[in-house]
Image 1: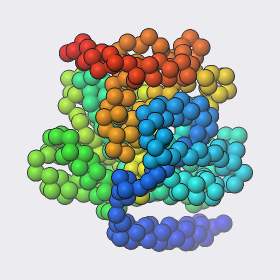
Image 2: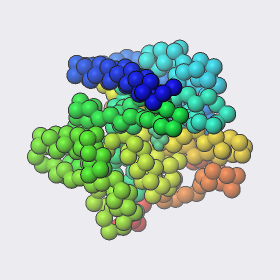
Image 3: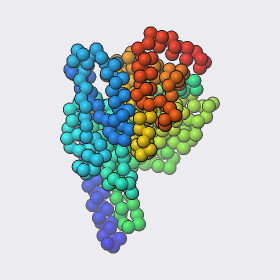
Image 4: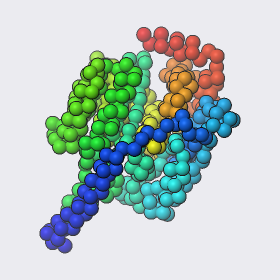
Length: 402
Ligand code: IPM
Ligand code: MG
């Protein structure tokens, strides 16, 4: 194909993409109301194991969730629904990021607890289909990816609000090779898409008495999309007079998270999709690894709770799956509980996790047979959760960190 023909071809593709994006904006403008979870009964929680280490750590997380919601489950106010089929084999067979029947089953729930899913890369043994995570976030319009990282002993109490449907992720796998020599992906920032994530961050700050929100961009170089992100943050900040907005560039931010003099000063961070992806792995590492970090994917109609990491195919290949860390998924359970209005139970679970992972550490996960299995760790956690000494022990932990 001549270069001119290649350009015409690319323009046609780009035109279709632009039309879709403008339609998406119209849908965002119409808004729609937030679902009122207090009025739904039964509250249906879909449990979707995923693949790789997913089904294993999800089963442990489900045990914890069932324990925490035991009364609601027995009253029939909450229902668990297992959703099978979000495996790489099924997705490849359907040639879809999420097979239609699985998507319909997900949409029939109010809340989803999801295990990690394999995301193929070019050259893998799987066809290079789109990430199920990215597709689910888009299909269910889960625009707010909320990722807390807390390390009391280092004075760290961060919460990241990662935009979850735009940026470099907006088109999933639909970038294209314009010619044999040139590839293009797209980065999109919309006024509406940015506003909703920034508001989510500011509302969190307001409700939790935080005085500062930090927007993280690279708007000095990525002037248009990141420039919009930072401008929207400044516009929204004006609605929150008691809260200061500051802006950091992503490169120096990744350095500052490692700076013992500065890092405890950050609290609430809001950032575009890809920067949020990268920096939350770094933050999680400071907390003890990605295996310790959970995330909430918030939308108006649905929400989905998951680990921040992938399906660890290497652990499967090495036969180490039983030793995978379920803490990330259990953290996601705590976020789920808080989201559906069980704040006290959620706090108890977080405290029990901190005792197990950061303080007492009688059962330690190493990801190998040198450490405990996910099941034994979860038994350990459940015994702390039920223990009458839990609060006092957590208090001792906090005092020891002072
Ligand atoms: C995450 C993951 C996903 C992402 C992958 C698995 C597609 O890294 O949730 O952070 O990039 O968002
Ligand atoms: Mg990630």
